[in-house]
Amino acid sequence: MDNDNKPTKFCYPYPHAAITADCIVFGYDPNKTLRVLLVKRRNEPYKDCWAFPGGFMEIDEDLETCARREVMEETGMALGEVFQFRSYSAVDRDPRERVITVVHFAFEALAEVKGSDDAAEAQWFDIDNLPVLAFDHRTIIHELFEFLEDVIYNDLFFKYSPEGIPMDALSKLTTDILHLKELEHPPIDDDTL
Image (cartoon, rainbow, N blue to C red; front, side, top):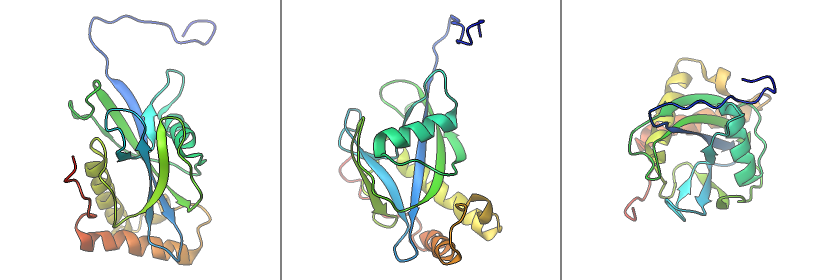
């Protein structure tokens, strides 16, 4: 950093990967099935496919700030507590360029959302009826389901559950997540890709 607190520019003789933050937002309601917030992509690649809200990290922000900003820009939703899950770095995961994403997740009460910025639409989907997903998002959500099943069985779920969630909603949330094990993986129609 220079004296103005602006990042100093460095030039390195090798290419750099871009970094993104994606956020899987689960919507809970004790009277409804667990839902996932998705956005329909306005632009290529995967134009008109559904994906998690997310995007490229700006030079002056950290990953959590990026995840929160992208969810707000694309859906209008302000997130409460956000948890970092893991990174995905397959060389071919994004056809535009070399992209590493760091996936976050959050649990929120169901709220109205609206697509904006580079999201043509934003919508809640029942967890057991997901559409075709862009990029490697199908793999990512399956791995997050497996992780959440593990934390439930190990009594760690309270660490990741939303603050102030009523006990009946928390009970329904854990039941819905454990139900995913019966499905093996949520059915996703990917014949169109």
